[in-house]
Length: 324
Ligand code: FES
Ligand SMILES: [Fe+2]
Image (cartoon, rainbow, N blue to C red; front, side, top):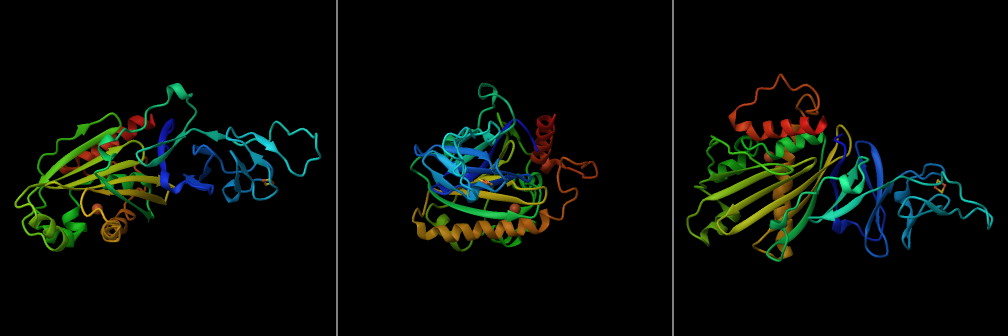
């Protein structure tokens, strides 16, 4: 797992009055909000007899273990052992590891590593997805795949006409990819493609009919270590997916998506956009889980990347740099 970096791990909106467990490559954390609404993250193993704190209760600014009620403060120290006689000292070792946590772009970000606060890198800043013009819905998807393959899939620009055949046919897509101009960013890279959509049907045709002939663009971006965005522009209609790919284990990734659109802002349309996204992800997952090796941290020299894979190449290059 890449170290000394922020991972997007949960929707901000999902962090409420109940503690929440987050698992990163098998290591468990517990998230909760204190009385000021600030997000807190602790190691999820009680120092007493190792029960999961995520099953406990929030008590003011503290978290109480479900088993014998030890009460932990936000800095991980135990403030109360209910079974102790009054005046009994609380052992120094009665503490759990605290973890730095922040909220940005609608997600909770957890710092994995040991850098002091002033040396930590910045979290990706995505101001284009803030503001009132967007309607937001949330969705989750579970992959039986390593998160590096999931990220590669999300920046893989040449698979849609094949893997998402119905979508490709509908849009009458030409499978050739123009020379990609990969634009590096502070956290990763992006690429923008234009497409002429000749024969749209149904929902998309309805959009198109309203604005005459236009070109469409899609922009794929990745942000180290576990975040991608996809922006689809159909004239003035925009649909965007902000995706946190939570690396639960070597073989399981949970993608948490915030889906934004600047049209049809009623919630009534959420289920159809979510269904559209889920169908694409199911098609992706069926193939991504077959790739070997499961993680790009292993040797991938048997793979043959071509010009249209420039984003995959950019991701692997950066992954290697971060790993060193
Ligand atoms: S295991 Fe947590 S209080 Fe005993
Ligand atoms: Fe796909």
